Image 1 (spheres, rainbow, N blue to C red):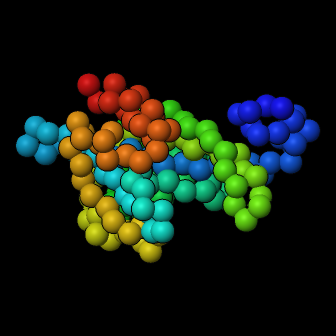
Image 2 (cartoon, rainbow, N blue to C red):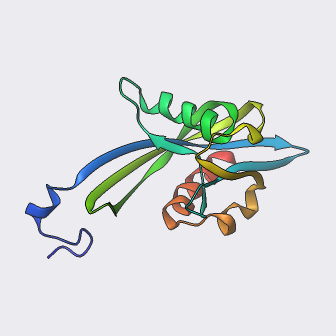
Image 3 (cartoon, one colour):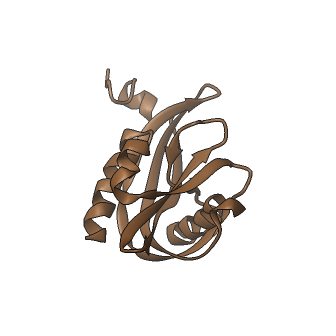
Length: 150
């Protein structure tokens, strides 16, 4: 029995695979770095804008679209910031999810223009982001983003 997956090798092949992409968006204001965080509706946790890769859409296109939809802003990709991988269950279905993140520079827009999937959003000082993030995987990918910001 593989504890990380909660099942045997044969059972792992029955897991649905999902691929998402998202952005760690930053802006420099008054010599301070701020990072965009969103709180998804119904989840109550804070993280980065991200979503499922659309049909005929690249990871980068998905990440930019999700930042626009969930974050309300336009951004440009600066670099890759890593990926996370986790497992969850939804309505009895076992799901293996990979999320690729990109470090992005804010270009324009207002975070209040986010879509219905987001309950709250905000610009958070870079040195306070980790304490606000809910999930360990987001904290880990943010570590790489911080190195890129230096």
